[in-house]
Image (cartoon, rainbow, N blue to C red; front, side):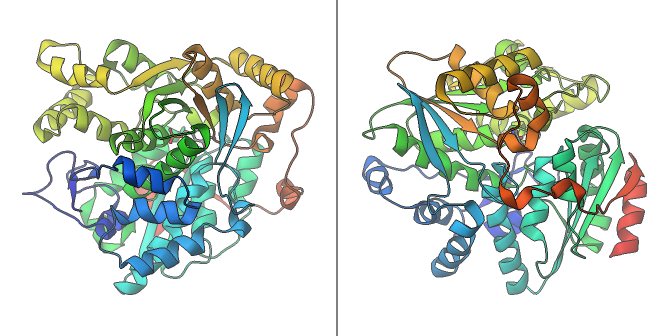
Length: 473
Ligand SMILES: *Cc1c(COP(=O)(O)O)cnc(C)c1O
């Protein structure tokens, strides 16, 4: 399996899984994608139905990571997906809420959000490759809350790795903030940026495009543009599919609350590999740039000023980094078209696929299975109340966004899986507002907010961030 850039790369920049893993962004500013998607036949799918999580993960990841020896990969995966880290040997589970309605629970890792599924594996993959290649890695990332803590919990204390995590100062929930900033490991640096998540992400991109700095200081990324993360998330769509169906012919729909387009891209990859997912139901909050795209064909990322702080803050994103991977496929993997679109984006602040020259791209979008919707704060409250009243289940506000939009598209005869992306304990204020009760909190997290916090406040300026890093490398 080889990895190519969505923008064509420098004279055919071709990478292995491990080098794409460490580099994150391609040199030309594009994203790494596998040169093809392995197709899983009916026979394999039937066998996979009975695998436990680590073995299922091994089957999937091995097809994309053939530069890691099979037994080695198995050891890394077995070490990652443990009862200790994920609360049960199932790792992810599926709860049936009613006829044809399922909640896919993927948020039982150390930071109580789905991102742990991929990040915990990434931590072990990084350490393994760095030791093998006698290298060090300095991870520069941006987070709107959950990615950061997930990355830090995956990398804390790991050899050969340092983490510099940019987060929007005072824009995360108190729980999220405490979770990240309370880590005291010497290899973890929390940088609180005076701006939004997008300012953080822009800084990461700016520094990532400074090739000299990037090489000199061994920079890498763990944000959701990292291919290995998307891949690791594809696993639970297979597992959820098996739980929600009796046989492998049945189609199901999935509803995914979306920010950076990572989690739902994983569902799309699973579909491309042959998993019978019918509709990929994309849910946004008030920051509805992706909903607008799927409805109109116009992709118009918002400015920092236009990005609203909502009660599903991990989706407060105005442009979706992973989106380029999807568009690359819809452009029939034509680098020139992708480059042209992203040039238009840079120049005019958006692009429109309904224009005649992009008609074929838009047709492929329409055939991809994606549908979309958005929700408001009032919708989240109403959904949290409804799910609690009907099923006795407390869902977090992001999960509620997905359920709200998912139910709008629910069709009789087709099971619907809604992904639970975080536990409600992380967003207690909104739960209190909706239900007037506090969500249960795992006992290990009881005194989280009273722990000492470690962070540095910096302006939204890439040069300042570089200076900070130089001082601490
Ligand atoms: C990150 C996150 C999302 C959005 O996921 P993407 O992969 O960025 O689309 C949704 N809900 C929660 C709780 C998250 O942490």
